[in-house]
Image 1: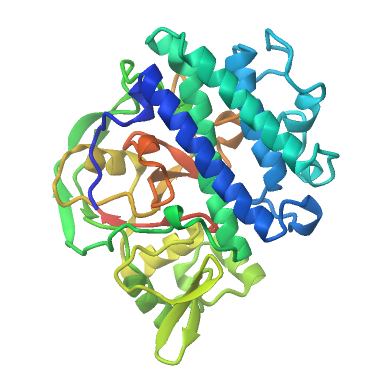
Image 2: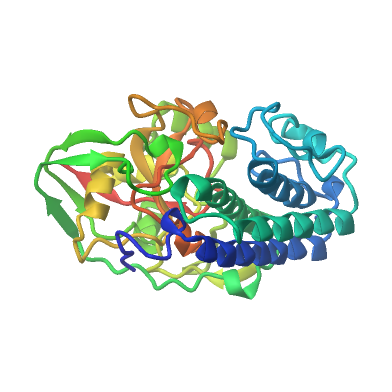
Length: 401
């Protein structure tokens, strides 16, 4: 699958009417995901493992609604706790659902309103948001908080879907992977060129870590036309890649010793074939599908085994925005060789905690996955993740000079 460089469906340029439709669709998806957690008994936080990559779904539903209320209805110019202009709909909403005030571990022990009350709160917020949006001028500045709330809900939705995978709970049928398998097309050679890295100033909405745009020279390189497949990664596993420490960095070796891992997350060997679990259901591992649930250390080890490397984010963005017909992306988020750092001149946007706390500790991911709503997909988007995390829909492609 080759994704377009730009799309009229992108939330970054969406009109008020398009945003109203997208916000409604996003909430429908959020509730479908929440219902799957509830049906499996995980709406009660005490039954949910306290993992760093999980959130109690009832708290997350409340947080999604609170976020939209904070930036849209309460007209807060930033996520700073004292910035809201108006009072909230819930008397203790800030104390319960503001991620800045409630530590991650504490979210399991909060005395939250009941499921019906939180759903009613979310419904009331969306109704008021849509009513206010119907009277907003179609200007980027006026539409910014609506685009921000939509992006936040979409990001939460992909995280909720990854959580269902981790817990082994069946996902809504509408969100199951229907993307075609990656097709191996060999390497694409790109000549050196100067590019503008990041989102142009006239891009409509941009995440703060994409700005300001940077002039960047990218030396010549060759990059895989498609992400590494399950079959290709299985060759690495079969060759003893997880046992041979020469392929692993010091940090990767330390992680591997703690995990005692001999294959990717969710893989199981059955006679002569690999099997996996998809949302709790056993399945034969599709050989030509882009490998997923790979962390940075596994990606780096595979590259060392095959004698190649990960692409820098500048190389990846150059390839993705080149319009080359053979460059396929969008099956999985892809690890890059670039640590997550601010571009020179970075200024935090309204959602201050989106990027800044993660600089220097995380690694840049580029692309998208089957779980990413198409409206969120952009070759400029700088996703990021901690190196040891592989629970999400993350894979890799290789590169060389």
